[in-house]
Structure formats: C-alpha cells, structure tokens
Length: 197
Image 1 (cartoon, rainbow, N blue to C red):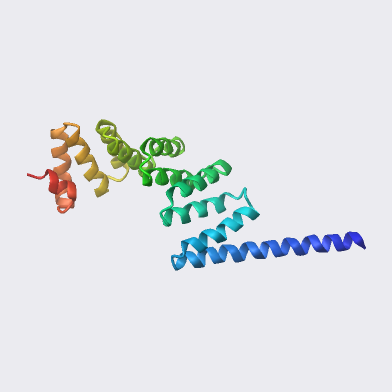
Image 2 (image 1 turned 45 degrees about the horizontal axis):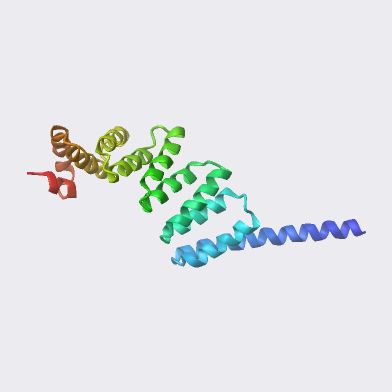
C-alpha cells in the first residue's frame, strides 16, 4: 500500500512539473509577443531552474536577452547552450552577441567555431569579415567578404563593406570593380555614395 501511494505521489508530482513547464513556456512566448521581455525572461529563468541542462531553455533565454539588448547575458546563455549541445543556433548566438558588444576578437573566435562545422556559412563568414573590418584589419575583411560573396553574390551589405574594405586597404582597382557592380544594384548604398566619383 505504501509503495502504491509513493508511486502515485511521484506520478502526480511529475505531471504537475510537466504542466508547470508547459505553462512557463507558454507564458514566455506570450510575453515575448507583446515585447514584455522582462516577464518572458523570468518565465524562462524558472524553466532553467527546473531543467538546468536543457539546451533549448538556454537558447531561448539567450534570444530573449539578445532581443532586449542585454548582450552579455545573451552571450552567457548561448555559451551554456553550446556547452550542453553545440547546435548552430547556440554558436550563432554567441557570435552575434559578441558582435553586438563590439568584442571583435570574441566575434572572430565565435565565427571560427561556426565555420569549423559549417565552412560555407555565409553569416559566419560575413560576421568574421565585419569584425576584422571594425578592427581595421581590412585585408582580412576583404578576404572573408570575398568568401562570403561566393555564397551569396548579391548580398548588398556585404558588397558595400567589401568595397569600403578594399578602398581602405589601398586596393583602388579592386574597389572600383566592386563599385561598378554594386552601384547599379544599390545606387543609394552609403558606400556607393561615399566612393562614387
């Protein structure tokens, strides 16, 4: 009889925990929908307390912190998610969070983690190029923007930064070629306006 009661209590507690988990997840999405990130984050924090080794919970917390402009907290939760399960979303989140904080060397390292697993990942290549650009390493930026543009040759943002990096690196001839390609596609592009004669 005692065993039956103990099993019943355990099953009831398990069902209650599952219901609480669903309610907290639903609350989190509901609050996010109305841009109440603080409340959405609190719901997810409770879920992390219940299931600290759940990669998705950390991914979701990372996203909510990122969306609310709390990039250091976002980076921390993306790193925790990546430690539990190194999925692409976690690696991208770390890369984006580092860039948002202007931690350029960390952004390069995070992009490298993505590129180890996905060597033709456009956004990792472009993010790495942008981090080099922001550090004034224009030759490296040119190299990675060129690689990225082999994947998405008409990404106008990447083309603009390639143009600027070429010009800042002293490659006027290469910059003029990029300008000739970019200008008819995006005549109001800030880099086109800056470098067009």
